[in-house]
Image 1 (tube, rainbow, N blue to C red):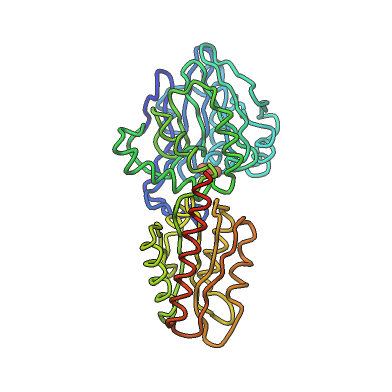
Image 2 (cartoon, rainbow, N blue to C red):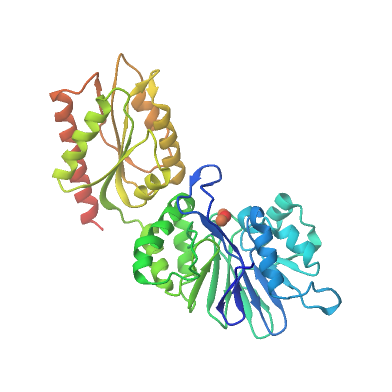
Length: 407
Ligand code: FEO
């Protein structure tokens, strides 16, 4: 049984839906599974496959291609002439060796950097490649592929492929979402708002956010293109491109929201008391709060909250003179994701001493934040601690007013 659908006449989705995958890179939760989209473009003279699929699902791709009755390309039997590799990561390139075995005349079309990576990662021989410059085109007869170098979405070799005549932009990871769905396209506005927006934002937060400034450049680069369909290699395609382009413009902008994210953990309840008091103090003052207990966190939700927030306040008890290891994990992650936060602080407690605050803030060198006076108490929090938390809440409100007024 095959699973392929027509995106437009002579353009087919031939990839695989991975309903069961729950973790990516052994790190990123995939609550809604994912898909590895590959697209077959049949021109009047040549045929191109855009990306392949994760090696665990090669069989699905091969079956879908067989259904297309392409032949192998040998002895004039058609076949695939080009496999466009927009990105070298294995969830899109991992089936390339098998595809090249089945279609021996096919050439891999990619950026020079992608050629290097595919050579290292998949041992593909040099003679199999055609490298393309930024803006270069490749004719399939009545269809023309234009290659747009788009580095750092999210590896250095990434590119986009624009099918001029049909106005389809194949974006691979860029603008995609980890979402297993039977929908080829985002079906309607309600689904877009309720489901796809969140999946795409989670994807942006975990994969793209560290490259926010280059993402802005790449968004500008495709501004002039007439785009009818955006076809990413994860999640459904968009026949309303502005839905995802506008979301990305918002997420990647420098604008922050009047929001405080509080990732915390508490061992004996003192830090939790402080966090709960502080949360209410902020809410009373009109600030949106997103609180995350790190004992069993969904790090994707934490990453999503960090996309927009102006401030993070980390809550930790003191364990062996430092922060709780689960706080260390969250702080390392936040530092790696480089959200556009403006302010940070720490709250928590200790039993007999330690260097919890210094160690937490030392884990955040990538964040260009102003550090606000932490509130750390010995043992359970009392009136003095609550007053200090009120002062911190006041300071955050005033800092937010300042920056939000200026934007
Ligand atoms: Fe979907 Fe960067 O791979």
